[in-house]
Image (cartoon, rainbow, N blue to C red):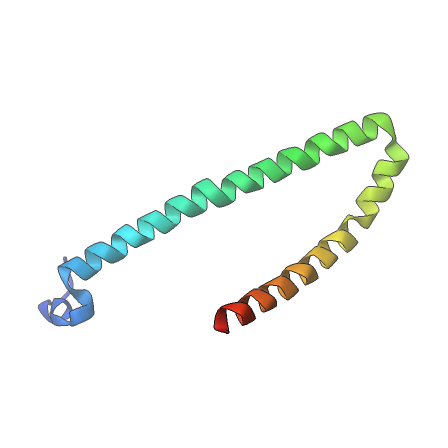
Length: 93
C-alpha cells in the first residue's frame, strides 16, 4: 500500500498477479508445514522407537547399527542424486 503508483502499472504487479502470488505462497507454505514437518516427526519417532527396541533386545547390535548409520546416510544421498539425475534426463527426453 505504501509503494508508488508506478509499481502497480507494471504488468507483473497487477492486483490479480499479486493476489495470485500471495495465494501460491500461502499454498506452498501450508504444504511445507503439513508435509515436510509431518514426515520429519514420523522419522524421528521411528528412529526413537527402533533405538529403544534395539537397545532393549540387543544393545551390541544396536551400537553397531548406530556406528554404520552415517555410512548408510551417505550411500542414500548418493543414491538420491543418481535417481534425480536419471529422472531429469527422462523428463528432458
